[in-house]
Amino acid sequence: MTTLPDQPIRQPSLFIPHGGGPCFFMPDPAGTWTGMAAYLRGIAATLPGRPTAILVVSGHWETRGFAFTGAARPPLIYDYGGFPAHTYELRYDAPGAPDLAARAAALLQDAGMTATIDPQRGLDHGVFVPLKVAFPDADIPVVEMSVDRDLDPALHLAAGRALAPLRDAGVLIVASGMSFHNMRGYGDPRFTAPSQQFDDWLSEAVALPGDERAAALTAWADAPAARLSHPAEEHLLPLMVAAGASDAPGVHDYAELVMHTAISGYRFA
Image (tube, rainbow, N blue to C red; front, side, top):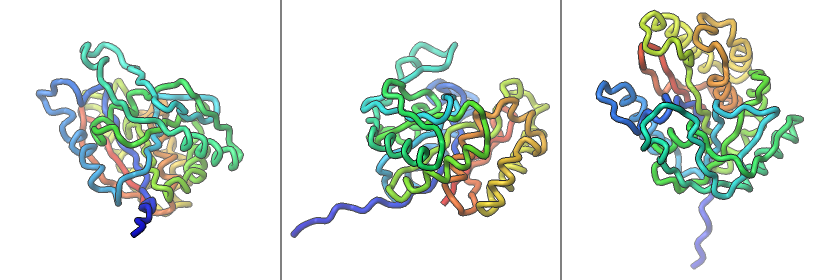
């Protein structure tokens, strides 16, 4: 009897926090990262099936236009400093997916956007650190996507809309950033209230239907405590891609005070 191949299962798009540097792989006696690590470890079990590949939008890669990693075996980029020596020996040997990179770039180009493939670039810590927690077997192909250095939220929402068909091919779109990213604020109790103000606004905006959500997120800088929460927005813009890839209201599926600041994660069906 002939066995038919499994059909790809439509995947959600996610916005996840990636923590601080290699935080999940160092001693953590205060339990600062325990909750976030548990959230990341639980992601795979919440998916409708095994992804065919993972496309990760990282706030740690800015390019003119959008770019995708095209290596068949992407190396790692240890783009953090001042951490223990062993954290520069971490491995995440997931295969790349050149065909996915080519299709993703073509989808953006067809939508009138600039998109290129970088056959040499590796995966930065915004990719390999959270994936090493969430998918430790490193057996699902991974492609990294940059953010556009003009940091236009409407452009990133449009990129998400263009990439949405990948979800029907079983590709899990993961936006990797931080819902609060002000290095001066981490660990400072004075930032708790403003970070919560912005987090409350962001969670309400994410839960809106597609067009309303897009309008709200495009104007994110007008939100309460927005620029205090994001002096620069490269860690917020991956969220726009995840949100743009879905018309469904977003679900607030992770919330925690980390180093006195409100941090959230979201899922889009």
